Length: 400
Ligand code: F0G
Image 1 (cartoon, rainbow, N blue to C red):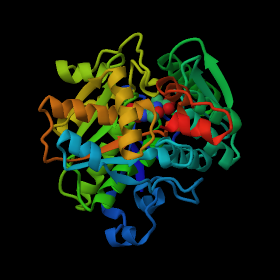
Image 2 (cartoon, rainbow, N blue to C red):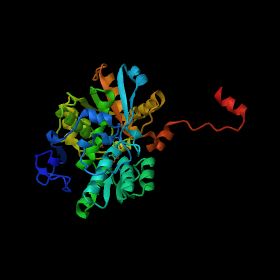
Image 3 (spheres, rainbow, N blue to C red):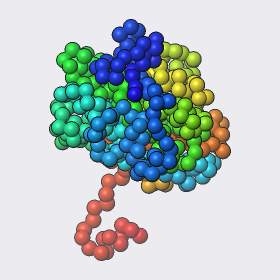
């Protein structure tokens, strides 16, 4: 049993309404369960494989989901990096290990399943890349046409490749993500297409399971969860999910929710630093971490609340810091992530060095997308392969 509730005025809507914003006050909607009526036990959850659908009682899908076995991503203890920073318990939850290589698959297995249950025929999104890749994949699995709008020239190669290969209709607009989102929203509302950006309350239900898994894998609540922030959906989703676990009595406290943005794209950080609510959108965001190149995050209201209510914080890191951490993760931990994902760990480094994170904290960084998503940014940072003649002497000569 669940319904949709406006996060602004509390107005409620039936779960089968196709609606993304409150008709009374234009705020976003959230899924609200009647937790008392749900039959859930932690023991039962623990008997199921560690995957997103382990948590199905707290997900809105009623029938068979459209699934590619998402979730159950590894939680790595980063001993080397942790030691360097003086942190005993620094973890990375590697969301790049999902079917399409990012956490978006958690949202899409739920969102596309709901599209089918609601009788929708076509799905659409705007994207900085990963959402489009994931929607193309799950649209293919569901046999449902997918339309994706991208900011022209600003999407990493691997993500465009995925969207194209999995058969989405890929449209690049000559403007940024924020404009693409406005356009696709309008198109969906007028043309009866199902919108699967993070304004869709069902999509975020899938993403909240990152927090559930982190708790189950650690066997405890982390002191802090650190996420890269773009449209601010993921940090809001994880916070919402953990709130439900508290209400159910499964956990007894909330981690400090911490959001990291790129220096050139930092409206949430500014809002936290200056005590603003609502935030002031940033006009021309720019960063090497194209996944989080977003100036007007639609979920900002929830994200600011999550950060403030949990005693968390927000920090910005430069492109240089992001890329340096991408290399450190790859070379010191064997964890290959795209730039936006490295931002979360780069943010921890910065906060530790500024004395704003206690070294005893148990910290989970969500690393959101796989290294291969953005091969061009990787190649630009690395020396090219050493080409030699095919003889042993030449081989030795470059090794010694
Ligand atoms: N990390 C990666 C790799 C992402 O692709 C995104 C968002 C984020 C972090 C930020 O998550 O938006 O929930 O705050 N990517 C979206 C997309 C915008 O279109 O793929 P958020």
